[in-house]
Length: 178
Image 1 (cartoon, rainbow, N blue to C red):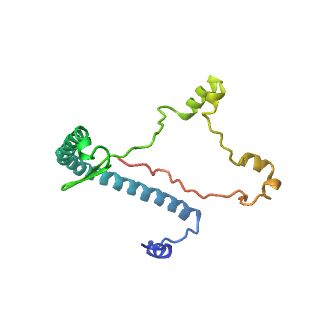
Image 2: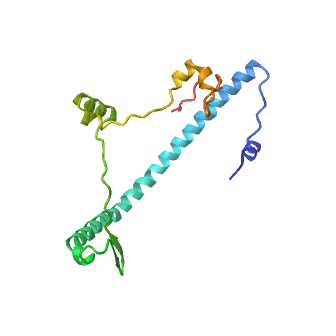
Image 3: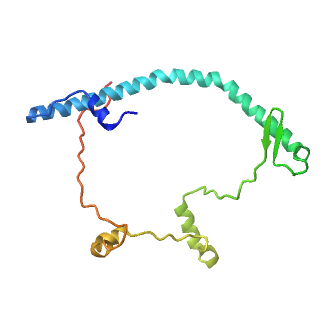
């Protein structure tokens, strides 16, 4: 893997702009190179699409066979579980062709809709039993810390990062050309 210095050394040399015209020219060139790269990536994806489709078509029978065999093995194993596991004494059955096992998964809960909506419904129930189903999480309040910076700075692990500036270049015309 290349380190940062090696990557920088391999970059093509570009002279720093010394005039506003050169500066604008660099931004225009950046946009053109970005558009060129996006076009190349689009061409690559177009070229790969038939390969992916051909592979998916070619592999479909294997996937179907795997699904069918898995279903058949599962059905046999479930129908003969007592014999295979010696009446439940074994969880894993070692066979000459491979192993099969049953694993009890712990109870899990799945939310079929947004958690905030579920919390709202629980709160609407109003009873203590329902409210016990909501976890309250305490987290540091950054907005309050900004308001009382002097106090917040005395807390170990809290530090303020003064306003930082980010430099961003957005050349015009960097969209994909037809």
